[in-house]
Amino acid sequence: MRNHNFAALFLTVALCIVLPHFLGGLVMATCTKDRTEHWGYVQVRPRAHMFWWHYKSPYRIHSPKKPWPIILWLQGGPGGSGTGIGNFGEMGPLDRHLNKRNFTWLRKADLLFVDNPVGTGYSFVEDKELLVTTDEESARDLTTLLIKLFNRNRTLQRSPLYIVAQSYGGKTAVTLGISALKAIKAGRLKLTLGGIALGNSWISPVDFVATWAPLLKDLSRIDNSGLKNSTRLVEKIKQQMADGQMKGATKTWGDLEQVIMETSNYVDFYNFMRDSGSKPVSMTTNELSRKTIMNTYSKNVESARFLPGIVDDLSTLMNGDIKKKLKIPKDVNWGGQSSLVFDSMSGDFMSPRINEVDELLNAGVHVTVYSGQVDLICSTKGAEAWVEKLKWKGLKTFLNMDRTPMFCGDDMETKAFTKSYKNFHFYWILKAGHFVPRDQPCVAFDMIGNITQSPVR
Image 1 (cartoon, helix red, strand yellow):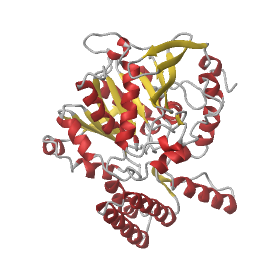
Image 2: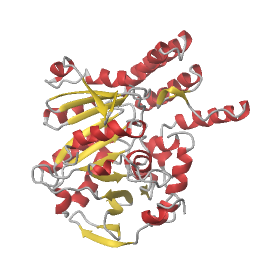
Image 3: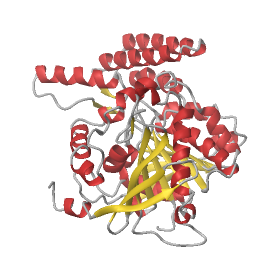
Image 4: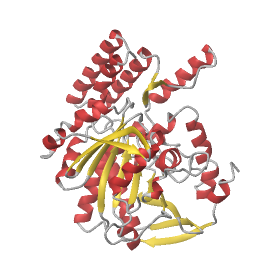
């Protein structure tokens, strides 16, 4: 037992839903005794199993004018676990110590966490050849999951679905959005797509990597030598992408991260105001810590480099108490296939998804971009760069608009800026890094209420 909240987490569970589906197989869900949580596996392809976890909000309001929303959260990596990092690390009902979270997004919507792609978190494949290799394959699996969860559940169908993603999850989100729209139009998927939100999302990798060295040079974090070496690698990445050498571009991306780390004295890619790793106890332990950091950065799996100490807490929690609660198969380790997931998708890792954002905007889907001010890996400067490449007809008007400041409660310190035009919205979140809901929970809470048009204020 971790603390007094642990007992509340472990309500009696039972097999509560068995949903037959025309695509074959069963959707088997376990739920808590009070039915506020449901979870289970969907076999999205033979021997490929995707884990999902749905929290029903206790604040749910039934209103015909403003139906209660559902947020589908997609983590990054690829290989980062939404059921672990997003849930316990950012906006779920409990934090990683199993204490209640004040600014849980459950106060604004139901939450649906999915470990995607298969092989991530509790999701698994029975043969590594079944791992996805592209964003499109990942989106197809997610569409299958949505079909099996929503088509036989009228309660879910009444709630608009908002796909909210972080980091690499943003590439999946926009690809899923297009896949879902096609399935809805074809009558294969019964749901209403409310919108898509891209948090510090890896939409155009080359636009982000091009900002790293100039930004750090302006901040006095690297010198001219570091800038020169980084610029050389960025140009190499651009050439490799132009030549169709996408796996080579991913490898050079890793080389660029190493140069940035070494010439900046190990800046934190998730918050450029910090150093990576914990405070040094001695030179020996500090060097060992840095070596570990370099190894984890080379894979870019969020579950492996979330924050010093947190990853260990999450791994212990997810492979211990939570695994027991959820009755996960004994031979499935949380995050056990994460590195395989990243390696399998390395050929698509550097591919941009700007065209998909354009397609969603032109289809009338509400698209929101939000960016943490001190994030490096998906910098605000990079996000602004790819947004300016959109061909959406409303872009010029949007770019010429003034921003509106945001505050929280009675605190009159500026927390963020925002502006919107038609169905495109942008939030600049101050003093936040890569993990906006964790770094600035109050303004992120208000933002998600705006995005989902939640009836609860």
